Length: 160
Image (cartoon, rainbow, N blue to C red; front, side, top):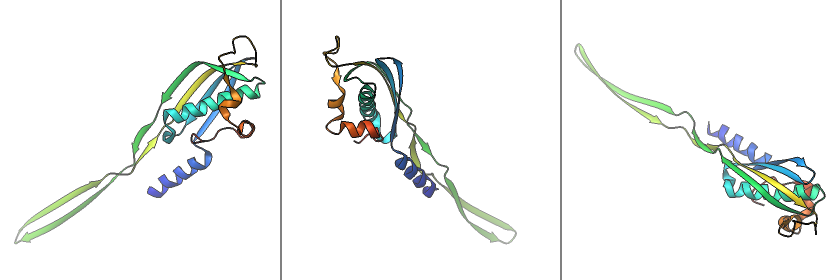
């Protein structure tokens, strides 16, 4: 059973611990939906969502963005795999009578964390100098010096 849990864990790591998608709701607005592995926590999911907002801003041809709405959900929970029982006993016989004494021990199965940390952001995008964008965040500054690579490759992990 432990081998199955390890194999599933390795598959999840290979696939990345976070994923995001975006839905454009107008020419300069989008909804970002992010789901991150339990190990990322709420903060990691928010960081991925923030980066995805910056990526979508650049892809849409804009320079800056403001987060105008946010919703989060934590569906993480512990799951315990089935355990096993072990019974040992001794029998004693004396003449026509007998006596049996048994002891049963339950060994709980392994525990693992299941579920995801989910974040949704509503984003309003601006071009540099556009009215209302003076307090907006710079998409390129949010992504850092390697912004072009991040826009091209996307965000797959909450640790980067």
